[in-house]
Length: 360
Image (cartoon, rainbow, N blue to C red; front, side):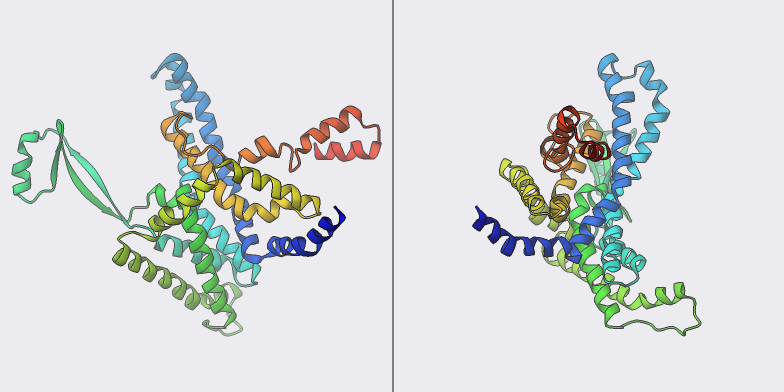
């Protein structure tokens, strides 16, 4: 046993410590933590609507008087959700760029802005909508088509395929866009950082205010980083027929999210957290870049599914970020809630009980 512990201390723990202090992984972790306020407010808005809309509708039927009375609050919660969960990827891109630039001691605000812009550059800029033509008989579709109108008959309605430019859908800006925000934010920020460190910047006179000087210094690195992503986007569309966000979702995000749902993955994550804590390292912090990157999008997609369908039936993911504190780390890693209860019930030592009070 001592030989195994010595081997772990010599070989495993230095690697784990380096991972825990790696700048890029720390920036990912801190980027996720920084967007916690809007994640929570979006979750609260969904929860409130459960009590003022979903449950009353299931109890008393749609259109009941209580739900009608709560309609202003329901709309407020909808606006909160739209301003939080549906723009989460964009917020994370800025947060990640900010923390990574800060880790390398360059202008963090510029790093966040550049990462945000680079991620938006990767997104599809247009969307196609079906515009229903009222009071148009389906028998007239052929005549409209002969005039060059892109009209389609669907049952008793006639619709037009309308393209709108400048559209950002929640598939890009919300939880499903987090992987693109992570990759785009990391790469664009790294380009910006490297160019700043190489002094490829516009240098202003010393008497120029620092805010102006810092902004001008970021122009060249920012332009290069954003143009790199614009070129990548054009290559993906021209050669692959898909935008980077769609390619990442199909070939990277979906497989990783699928692997995260088997029992082995959940047990492995919980086990590694405890092993790291056993040797005195903050297991949760070390693994957070990996755990948050996979299980947080799962949590948010479930939240979006519930907001849209108002039911837990058919949710895409079973094991999410909230599952770990709920089922395997209650009160903290090692299920310390049980330890606190045991201390309060059985311990007579004053110092131990004081620590337990603070922990509780």
